[in-house]
Length: 180
View 1 (cartoon, rainbow, N blue to C red):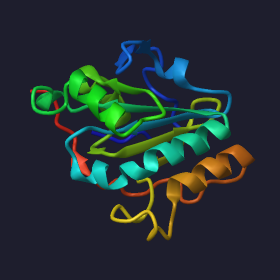
View 2 (cartoon, helix red, strand yellow; view 1 turned 135 degrees about the vertical axis):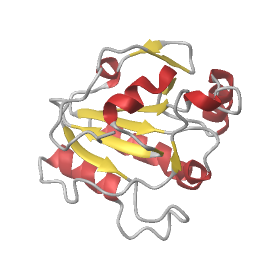
View 3 (tube, one colour; view 1 turned 60 degrees about the horizontal axis):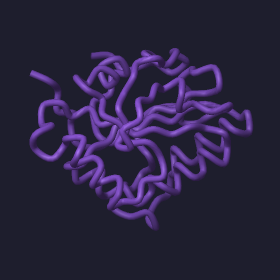
View 4 (cartoon, helix red, strand yellow; view 1 turned 180 degrees about the vertical axis):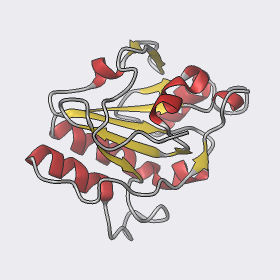
């Protein structure tokens, strides 16, 4: 499966997903005037747990810069083993998510994006063109130990109209649990 290329249009922007609030959302609906941040995430991956303390600060930074944020759970194969909508609601509440967390039923969006891991980040500009993909930063173990805040730098560069460097990093995390 090929990962979405830098410069590619966001796929399936009108595909409806159910958020933990019960609301039906689309990527187009979540996007703001300066773009969209998509985070393929889940409940059961230890890598997500390590990075999760950065989710809300990053969402806040994105919102401040007019970028909408959504987390999508693509782990279809283990919906009955910690990845159900009920499990997602509990996770979003426990972690006080400040952004929509929605079910990627059948891993359709993950497939369209070429996402392979959780967390796996995709940042789009105002024209819904991919400008950054990969990891949140260079240190899953410690927010204080981060030397390269890839995603924060990409958000700031996008908002300022500057070149994003790097545009792509290696996504580290658990593999997506694909449907049978």
